[in-house]
Image 1 (cartoon, rainbow, N blue to C red):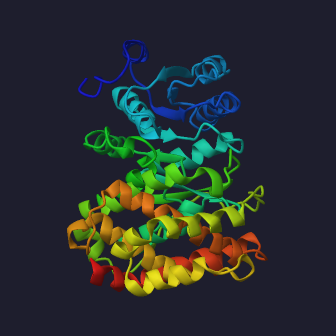
Image 2: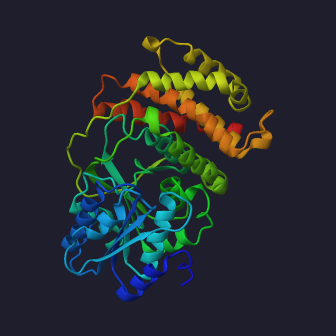
Length: 415
């Protein structure tokens, strides 16, 4: 009962009524009334179709949506025998708090496997549940990360920082470390629940990168599930991704201090095994506003040059200033410079006392990095204008990841 303090009384009552379960699918949500019924019903169908002998539970952990998400989830049809728990989570507003409630319910019910899926999914199918839960049920791994087919302008935080940094730091090639849809073993759930992170930014949007990094660094077996196209409520990165960037990257950077002895010794990258057959599908296009992203870089330089000069190596700042002065027709923000910028900021975040004239807080450092993220994302858009998805993956994303690996000595020297 030690994990029940933050669960609502009606949830504890439902846990007692259900008793025990074998498989649980958790769905965090906030204002997803238009998609939640499809996700709930599809997840429930997946459990009964692929794990017919398992007692199944679907949990919607909501952030107090004013649009009626919880009511829609409560009414969503599920197959006979599937239990449902719909609750508003307690804790800081964010996906991590939703996950904490899901994990606690899964632990209390003593499940054999816990799956979490996003509430805005339109591409989820029943077989997704088998792909995410099957490797754990079969004893193949402890943590299942998703492997999607995504449009080249989707997942810019993943492509530009979370993927190359996770790969370079920890030596494991996990293509979607913040994908949103995961399978988790009961042992790993226990580990997660015991960590003192649930009142921090991890409880907001830092949860996915925290889960992946913790799994990798604490010896969990990791695999990737082929899930095909991810179709969800995509957002233009130039407009909406700033807060998410700050919380995700803040978590990523803070974990570098926690697992410093682990990543410092990593000198090569290993592949991560796949589960399921790959699919050939085409993702939906994602709209981007190139001019808006370039303007954010220029405005950032105008407002933050003094702070940037305390964080960036002099030659890197000079190159950023040159790029910001380029007309849009000639714009380019090279991956090599971006890797050094990320490493400079990672050092500043973790070693503030060692940086000249740097008195900024960790939050201010991440906020100051955001315009540079927009600048690199604009560069990625320019680089990939004429590329199809497969060519983009190899020539832009994979090349950038290799550059992060090659420049790891630069990080170590500055650290």
